[in-house]
Length: 256
Length: 363
Image (tube, rainbow over all chains, first blue to last red; front, side, top):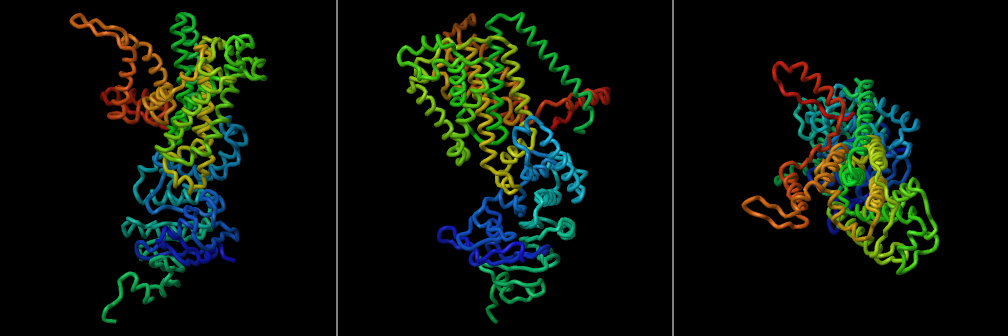
């Protein structure tokens, strides 16, 4: 039984078909790469899965629950978390608070009991704060706990964004270009980090990435889209030799 | 950093509260009615500013409907607390509708009721208004306030229309207004520092990321909006008790503008800033009355122009927006750590003449 299944989802903006007939099944604990040239519709696929867009066609099942028409916050609560292509941290908050925000969706205490600091609220918060500190320790950001999030170096901000997504206790993690703008060293660290995340937090990871070294290095399966159409899927080795993929990236050889 | 000195901070807080209490006690005893009234108005502005800051400063929703909620609160409190005889005197054009004529509640009940009714209206209009963002939300909430004003002018059998209500129970005790302001400050502080407050700030910082973190945008915006409306209702009710007469034209856009000016001057997203700036504005409004009067400079005498002081406030606001966008406090808050650090820091490097800059963070 797949964790996430998208059944022939499509997204049209007016006359423009951004994605068509996209079918994907993610198994537990795999790392899958979603690649394709610019404008291929990768982020649109993310936005459909996370509920930012409602697909024009098709159905999305997560843990056998239909999430096709659901709102992003509901989908996050069910267990899908994401990061963004352009980092979106909460700029007025510290590293710790950024992580703590993600726990809010798990809070049961009412606003009134929060304002009056009733035992129900304070015991819940105590638990979440401890979890957050533990998480920061696990992702190696504990020495920056009380720093302002946006004052962190770029690589750490990326890492914090992933940690924040993990704080929602997801089963599926969507990473939108986690290695964007990273130098080879940072990218190498990131690869190890993503593997650790998968192993330590038991999450399935779907990632969009242009950095081929990262994609080929950590993904077990790769799906290639171009102009909204899935043109290939397979292991990194298969993708690297796939003629259609090479054509999509480099163009058709006129002398062939 | 955040957890140390907690004992010291507790004693400092208790000390500060005692000091504030003593200040209010002294002021109550040495000032005349007029000065006390101004200070009470400052307390009302504190409450109104805190309410609007929850919506505009902490959630980043640009609402201009504060006067509407104030009006709802003021009328609710007045109609619930006025003695039946006073109501009969007021409603000579058209009688007041049935149950309201005989209602006579103590102020302790009328005040929270005013807040709750305003919050209820906040909930009602939140659904359509909060679908909008930015400028559109501002226009829609402004429109709501104006519509309410027109409705209140026309609903003569409930509000006495444009004639207004006179003879509202008068209170001019500083204890009453400043205790209410203190309770408001504590409640709002508790809210914005709670997990819910963090969710509001997340929405302000980045709505898309907040939603992706599982925060239900609509629920939290409604929460923020009706909390703000609640305190607007309380503030409006207090304004009624302070001036003892209300009519719909007291609650025009100018009223909202005053409160908006307070929170912008104080810093959107700072409770400390709101309190400071509310007091400054309330006092300045009176002090600057000299500007309204004719001025004789010796070589030239200027005629008195009523409303000149508002020009000064407008200039002040312009200067703040041009050169000091964050207001007095920005999003920072008063914090004992800051003072403790400053004292320690000065002690440490005082000899070198180094300038201290303590961290004002969360605490």
